[in-house]
Amino acid sequence: MGRLFGTDGVRGVANADLTAELALGLSVAAAHVLAEAGTFEGHRPTAVVGRDPRASGEFLEAAVVAGLASAGVDVLRVGVLPTPAVAHLTGALGADLGVMLSASHNAMPDNGIKFFARGGHKLADDLEDRIEAVYDEHRTGAPWERPTGAGVGRVTTYDEGFDQYVAHLIGVLPNRLDGLKVVLDEAHGAAARVSPEAFARAGAEIITIGAKPDGLNINDGCGSTHLDLLKAAVVEHGAALGIAHDGDADRCLAVDHTGAEVDGDQILAVLALAMRERGVLRQDTVVATVMSNLGFKLAMEREGLSLVQTAVGDRYVLESMKEHGYALGGEQSGHVIVLDHATTGDGTLTGLLLAARVAETGRSLAELAAVMERLPQVLINVPDVDKSRVKTSAELSSAVADAERELGQTGRVLLRPSGTEPLVRVMVEAADIEQARSVAGRLADVVKSALG
Image (cartoon, rainbow, N blue to C red; front, side, top):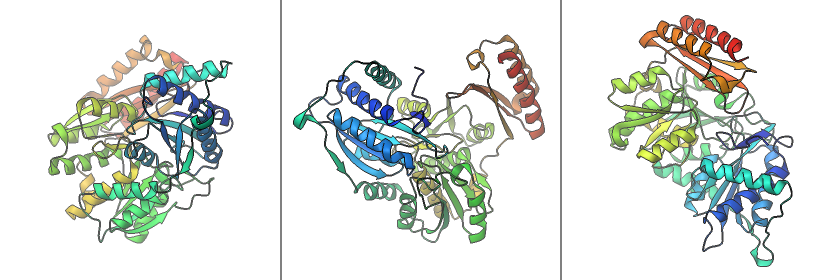
């Protein structure tokens, strides 16, 4: 069996790769592994379980709840809520475990399972590995030790989670949004109720699109992966800005009043300066991944802020933040973590804080985002290659060195094996888009010949 857990939980086509049996088995395994680790010691364990609106989430939620309860874990079913809401409630309610069913920005046929440890933090890699091992052991025949009688878990519907989470979001805002017109694209996803409610309570005048999930339309031509509808709506309604979430609302991209995209790097830059101004940007440091635009790094240097870069994946950003006590981190894709108020990327919180900065300063989002200039960036995915040889191929190393010499200080090259697919991502930045395309194309050809 290949490794089930990727950089963000277990994902696959629902009812094909990700079956009810797998969901149930992983949930039972997670309960046993956490019990072995002492997480449940001295008390009756509790788990928070939520999902996005995908049709498959209904049967997968039933499987997860059944698995946990069969292992003696009491379950609080919070229903359709964003991933960061499940993480927040796991911590706020003192639960021992959180489970979110979502495939984030993926198309509707996919789904996924993400586990949170006590406090709402993502499980450590070693615990995920142990859950896989225990699951596989029992999948092949070893019997589970099962509680009976009063030892089985009880299942409760917890509707209060919605208001608790919205109240948390409003409590974080440094100022209100009165008089600000905002368009919200909810991707027909998990934030379809939460995000409009939070923005409205904060005083914004809101227009919503993509806020009618039917179980089948999540991320379908809308949300953070399809910004055209939001761009048009912002211009049409004369809004100050637009906010786009993905299916589980752990990320946020934005659109300024002209309809121009504001990506995760720019959002991080705006929030970093706002947090420094308020004295809450600890060590004047921002954490981002190696995929962040070079323009973001140059902007942080110009503003006197330090930048720490990690491997791609918000879990690695979070690990660095927790280890060193940093307050702000994120990814170009719009995963932004404000660690004082969230344990994972929170798209609704990010959008609220961005809107709050616009309201507070009276400056347009376009002006605020201009703190950094995005250098042209070209990304090419090279499929069907041996990604394990990226670091050992002499031919590829030579080609990369040549490209770096050509780009000099005004560009960079990054080759990254995909964490979930048999492909290598070639990313090139340069001061000129044509140069970036040329270099990226040549490197992609070398990747094919050297690793194919």
